[in-house]
Length: 292
Image 1 (cartoon, rainbow, N blue to C red):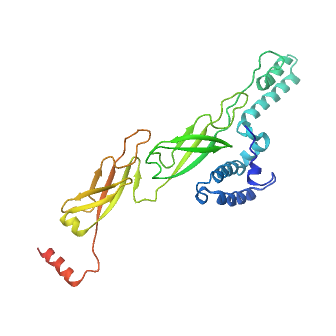
Image 2 (tube, helix red, strand yellow):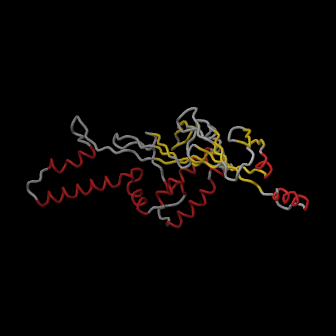
Image 3 (spheres, helix red, strand yellow):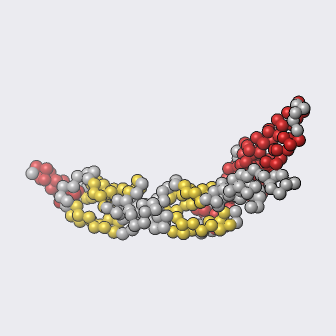
């Protein structure tokens, strides 16, 4: 897989300070944010690359490793351990007459293979993992859907199951960076941000809705129509419905993740709107009711 130049992505040189990186990242992130560029796949990819570049270059320790090892920076610890091993072997060779060339070359054989033999022995490493975010509306996850992501210039077609939760992360195996020396590819981790502009409050698979009744309907009973996420439902209000009374509508909640055709419930809580600015006649009527 081609080397990703994080400095080039941010448009800065290697001498840039942490403050410079932060300033440039914020400016570009605003420019390419998916919310400001809906349905623009190019901006979405650019935003993902900016986040990846900022994550590495804004962290002094990660940046140091990246500057030294490039695309293999996540394996810096393994490389440095091998380097220490080499140094120890060299010291041992200098201080012991029993150290031989075969012992000294074992490090190079483990890392780069015995090029003179028919077999090649190498140390392999798993490729770098990638992370991405997908922002959806609560209406988008009422049914399963397919979506195409662009990761490092490669299109990946994924299925997003209905009912995925806000903050949930799924792993797409093998779609990260290419492995080193034949090691397995890294993985792609996708986190979901679920926007909920509705009056429904989600609690796992269930939804909660507060419905305001006028005082007459609460006292005398009646029938009302409410919206669910996918339809309208008629409810019968019993006489004398109290504030805080609840009714459960089976199967009118969220689809259950990876359980086709199964849904949570909608829990409706009633509250009562007390009338204000009554006329004198209306007040007298309430007084008569109170006396009765």
